[in-house]
Length: 110
Image 1 (cartoon, one colour):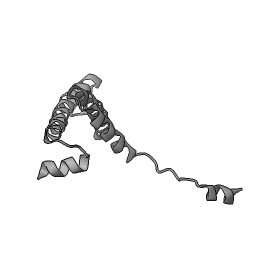
Image 2: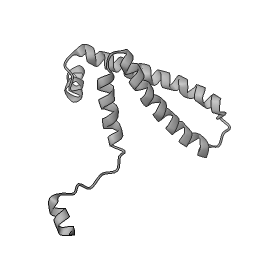
Image 3: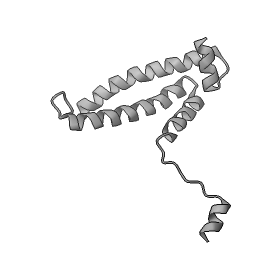
């Protein structure tokens, strides 16, 4: 039942592809935690670092690391096209909404 909902939501055909996608998400999440710790050590952020610095760096680094790894690991598992579309849809939510102009709007402005 769960796979059927995911297949419909993600517009994919096979249960195998759903399983592979879920594995990619799991591996990516685990690798992100590991690499985030390495990144924090590299730039010198510790538990004593002020929260005002730690929180924004944490959010930015996890977001960047996760999304890059998602594409790389998705490619390794043969699911690059799915994850590329997934990323575009995810980041389009953060893009500012553009006001569409129509010919009617252009005529009224002139």
